[in-house]
Image 1 (tube, rainbow, N blue to C red):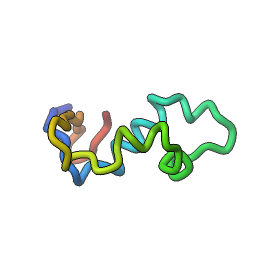
Image 2 (image 1 turned 90 degrees about the vertical axis):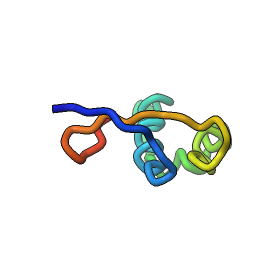
Image 3 (image 1 turned 30 degrees about the vertical axis):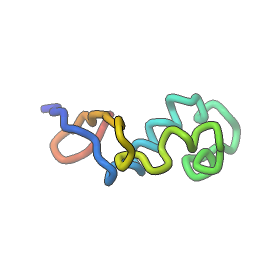
Length: 68
């Protein structure tokens, strides 16, 4: 069963994984989640995420595993 919970600062690694696909980096040869973390155009979305006013998000969970 899938459930939803609020995303927090501890979810940043998972959010980077999701941003990898949202930014279509998976279609770029050689791109990795680690490589997009150095992209200034993408860093602004997640650097310090969860600690800034207005940051909000949700995670879909399958059991305890974040899936979306």
